[in-house]
Length: 376
Image: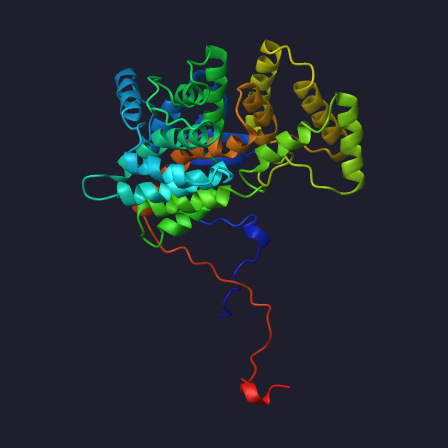
């Protein structure tokens, strides 16, 4: 019987690379669920801590479990002195994603996974401390301040905003940040998650997989799209200028970030949620430029290319109204997605098989080696 040839697909598009019970993406063209719960319900009714608990532990927490989990994360926010010293040595001009990648790897040496520090301990510690790492580095290099990395906030959204701005955030801003973390928490076998699963399939420590995932998220075709979207939106002083600018870019066939998606056919279900958040904050700030410009770009892309916004586009606007510097947009993605990465790492470990696909060779046919002195 003739052996069937492996299925080939550029970028592994459409290839089923494994099984997961964590998330569905693109079901019927639009759906997104975390362990069976729709993203719309979670964003409207839940909190990021509840979602992280769900992803990592398999079920939504009861009230006492959520309270205990919030306290657990609060107790994991403070950085060891050795970590602070490492962060101070990372150059001020480094990208904040490099800060988190380095911080993750360093923490793996300072607090290694072992018999007394479980994979759940590592997952929670990373989620709780990534904001502390990011903002400690930011304040040290921008203001020369060595901040205390315990905020007293009982949510990671509030913790990040409090450390960044030095004061308790207003409830509307904190809630928008919380919703954004929920939306970014998990997305099935995306590039960074698949990278984490490939790495952990070789049986290294937990930190190695998360460090690799951060590296995969660093690129503009994945996590960096929200930063690119903000840079695009900020180019234009008003909606009319935005429309003309986008039409010019389309004529030049320039890439416009924040639109379309590899999996969703009709719309990104997360985009509607974050757009509403961005609109709410725009109204709160009496904005007459950023949100109208973004909305016009959205309209032009739908009209001219039939492309919908993805999560990154309106997230950029929402984050700007939260007072977050653009280079921190993708690191916020890391803080959220660590919950999903960690869930996948644990799932891969449960039924592990080394991930090793085959390649379609397109190089030269076999040829004889020519000694160096005989090469013309």
